[in-house]
Length: 350
Image (cartoon, rainbow, N blue to C red):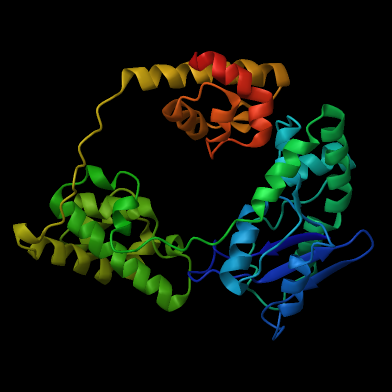
């Protein structure tokens, strides 16, 4: 059974699942969580090991199914993961369907608002297409992996997907500091950014609209840098759209006024953590491991990051195993990676 979900984070402040699509080889169903009082049967089905669940890029779907319903899926396959391990350069669903199923699908509703009701027929057809062809694509990709002798690789990756859980949103207290280039601002500019960010989030929550639809990060930074005191100065601030000025002029100027009125001691300060001294030996080990990984990836016609990511190479460099038993103690390494790459890694460390 193929499974997909649709959320609306591009449109809504409070994201949730707005649609669930299911396809067997013979039929497709679309579930409306807003209309169904109880989705427990879906949870039972996802947990049923007698039924294989096929996703394309399961990561986010599994996390939000856990977040919204505490549903846990068992016995999974993922056509995106399968495509990566098969060495496919284009791993989007549309590209894979075109190559393996000889079918062109529309991308018209990729950023659609799935919270709207009623959903037009074109959106329902688009949603259905996301799962209708997945069983056939799954067959083709697993057959390709079998030809390449990599089916066991995929099965190990699929097994790991079962442990995915929603990890929750980070504490929003210092969320404004996570805006790109925020840490280049002065204390007073940071105070304005903090106030503007708080105002934007409160308004987005009140209206249940995605934050960037209230005011984009670039505009937040532009106002914070310029600290305009008047409407005329705000209107002349580069990066502030006229529509934003029309709707929120008073709120923007009030945030700036509060920031300018703050005592110097009350301004936000960025704690600069001391840089960890570079370890030349460790860096050299990582580079040797990377070179070995790249060589094997080229031989397998695989993306190096798919074969073994940098974080995993760094974990190996820290442990410095000298045999396969030692490699098995590196939790980040998969069994299939040790089989395919182990000898090259050990030689690089030696």
